[in-house]
Length: 320
Image 1 (cartoon, rainbow, N blue to C red):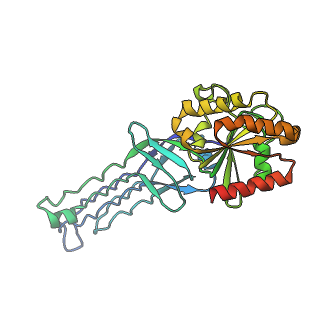
Image 2: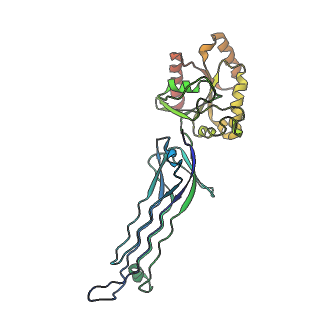
Image 3: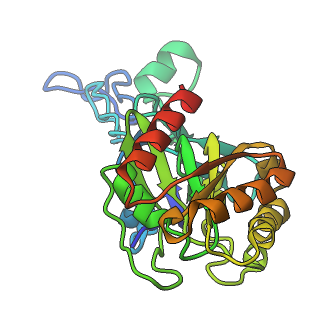
């Protein structure tokens, strides 16, 4: 099961308290201040990984804490700085700070993102005495680390998104175009989570089937519409044996518009699937009918190697 949305709480570590201590030895009972500073608390960072299932780690673990900094000690010993907490999430994760409008996105595996700053260690009385006129027993308390409630949403980053009504052949197409192995069967909603595959350095995402009313929660609802946001090209798959091709197309088009009208600005190609099931004359008539949409139209059959090779070359040229 792909976990693509989860809410967690992250708590940065507190800074350690500074020490209030007076130096003494066998000859001196009460010397000057010698209390060390406290260590800084650990901050919370996110880093991207290529593992799409990384959010599943938070299904049951909803609160994540960084370590606190250690307290300072006598003889001007500084407390240890705490280790930062590094949280791995899939590339394409959108992080929303609940209660504010701040949104972050994880776009690569190299750039850490800090979301909760650790507390600062308090200064010990030795440093304070040197800097100020505080009394010899004065020391600072470490500051509290930040706490954030975060909504993590995975948005698949793909070059091509396969969209269309259920049972139009998207999963079968993904399996022959790429190295992916999606579940395939002849009934609606076989695909219950997005699948990714790659061919010739092109990433293709199979978006689970949409239906009329998906944008308002019907069928699989809006659960997977968000994954279309990050795709560069929409490959709108339509079963060529469908009685009303235009109605089929408009159903999906309307759901995209209802969810986010900006999706209609994406490049879109109509792909007629299962062309092995009709004759050439009927295919030409159906292509002619769809010309009124003013979209590029391609055809394919998963049982026709020539059409698969042609589609791969077409996508390679289009994307690159």
